[in-house]
Length: 310
Image 1: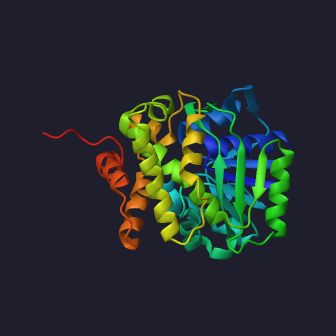
Image 2: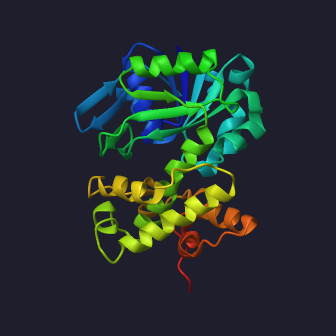
């Protein structure tokens, strides 16, 4: 397949890299020092199983340089969705579909507002990594998979073709009939983990194993689940204990990606995580006190490290 990767960070870099190594025509759309390093020596993925070099892909700055493609794997930060989607119009006009695997639950709708609803499949990614220096991404666990689906739940030819390409590349890829429910099931933990690791400046090994912190984490999970159900999303009855058990299985040194942005003074996806929960909770009459506290405490850092008060 001809595949463009919009965003060569931890998510796009990993799955795009494996697709390229499997022989697919992959083009990464990136910028800055990261792009320069990839052009010079390729993309390097440091995984628990060793280093993988990706040197058969294309690396470009502008979407128009990617050429005709079948799929655009969309993996930018949530705060950059509209700006990143607009340049993809020539690609989707040429027949490409967009598979959005951002963190959160509303990204496919925001992309569709720019490119058209029939051109976007919602999705989610299971992978944990961070860019340690330009051109090099380090992964901290063996999680490796994508889940995605059409808005109407159909098993379309384009979705099945991309699923098969992913599976052939060596990672799990599931085509699911209710992608909204799958996204919210992940979001119960994702939104909570992003805020708690950022608030505490400590990893999963502390937050999900300290007996005094665990009850707060489970209440935060429950807030997200309550909002989801108020939205009409069907979640498993045991979603909260299931999510806690999952997070307790994470490597104890694992942080959410939002923590790394906070620590480096970069913009954060907070508004699409706890911020989204708070806004939807208010609209639906669902109390979300823990996520509201997290949102307000981290809000000064939303656009990067704020200037000191004088």
